[in-house]
Amino acid sequence: MIAFTYPGQGSQAPEMGVAWASHPAWETITEISEATNRDVAHLLLTADAEELRQTRNSQLASFSLSMVVMDAIARVGLAPNCHAGHSLGEFSALAASGVLSLTDASQLVAERGEAMQMASEENPGTMAAVLGLDDKTVEEVCENIRTGTKNQVWVANYNAPGQVVIAGSQTGIDEASEQASKAGAKKTMPLKVGGAFHTPFMESAGERLAKALDKIDFRNPDSPIYANVDAKLYDHANPFSELISKQLTSPVLWHSILKQMLDDGVTQIVELGAGKALTAMAKRVEGANFNLLAVNHPDDIDKLLATLDTRSESKKTVSSSTTTKSTTLTEDQGEHLYATERIVVSPRAGVFTPEPDLELGSRIKTGETIGTVSDDEVKSPFSGTIMGYLATADERVEANQPLVWLQTQPLD
Image 1 (cartoon, rainbow, N blue to C red):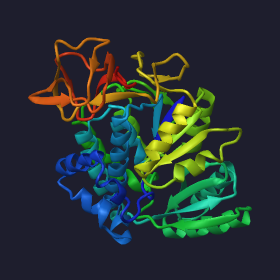
Image 2: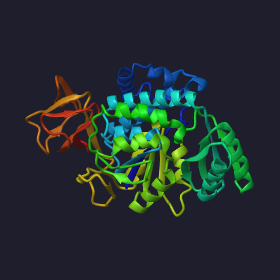
Image 3: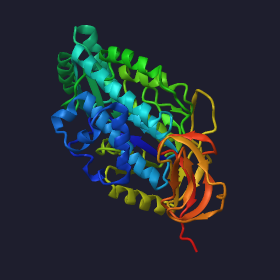
Image 4: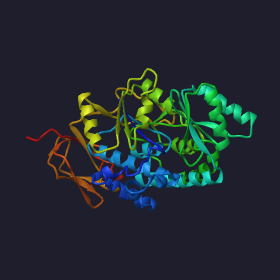
C-alpha cells in the first residue's frame, strides 16, 4: 500500500523549482499564479531565502512545488492508496486527492499564509525543536511553564520519536528550551519561522480562514486522507472544512499518523515536494520498515517507477464509503495499477465528452484524440489499450483529473 505525503512550511529553499521549469507539469504554476494573482514562478525560481521565509511566501511556494510534482506523477499514471500532508501539506493532500480543486486550494493556501503572517505580527512568537526527549516530558515542561509563569509555550508538532516542536512567546520558548535540556533533551534548536504556529497565537488566522472555507465546495476524496488534528483516515468531504480550520491552533500529530499508516498496512511512503523532512521522520517510527522515497526532482519519477515495477504493483484507491467517520485501508480497495500502465488526465476544467467510437479494449496511438473537455481535444500522450474510463460522459472535471486508464504495452 502506498501513501503520498506532502511537506509543509520550512521545506522551501531558493531555486527549488528550477529542475521542474522545463517539465510539462510546470503549467500547474500558471494555474496557481492566475488563481492567486501571485508570481509563483518567481518564488520557485529566483526568490532568496529571506523572501521565502515570509509565511505568505513559504506556504504558497511549498504548496505549489508539491502540486507540480503531483501533476508530474499523475501524468505517468501513478496514484496512491492514501494521502497525508504535514501542516500546510494537508492542503496539498486535499488538492491531490480531489477534495479541493487546484484553484480553490491555491486560493486557500494564499489566504492561510496571509492570515498566519498577520496573526504573527499581531501576536509575535516563534518555535523550537526539542530532540531526544519523550512527548510526555515535553508536554509537562510546557504545561509547568504556562502554569507557573506568564510565559506561553505549547507542543506544536509531534513529528517522530524524540522529535517534538514547541511554539509560543520568545520568553516561553527560551524557558522551555532550558527546562527541556535539564530534563534530558539531547538538543533544543530554534527554528527560523515567522510565528508560533499550531497554538492559540493563531486564533485570529483561524477566524479569517474559516470565512474563506465557507465559500469552498468540498468533494469526496479519490483516496482517503489522514488528518493532522486527530491522525484519523477520512474518506468523505464533510469533515475537512472543520479539520483544516482547527489545524491552525492544534498540534500536528504526524508521529501518530505514521504509526496509523503502519497499522493500516502502508508499506511505501512517497514524499512529494521540497526536501526530505517527512522521509527522515518516517525512518524513526518504532517497528516500521517503510519503503521511502522523496520525489523533488524530475529524475526521481524514474526511480519511483523502477521501485514500483520491482515491487510488482501500486494500487489506486477509489473509496466507496459515504460515512463522515474515519475509515481504514484494506488490501482489496481500488484497482491494481502497474508501472506499465498510464492515466490520461484532463488538460483543463470543463465537461468531458469521450470519443463515441472508443470503448473498453480499444487500441489507441500516441496523439490520438480520446475525447474533449469543453471545446479542447484531449490527445493521449501514450499508445496502448483502454482499460477503463475514470470520468463519465458529460461529467464536469478539473484540470489534471484522471480521464482514461491505459495499458501501455507496445501495440502490435
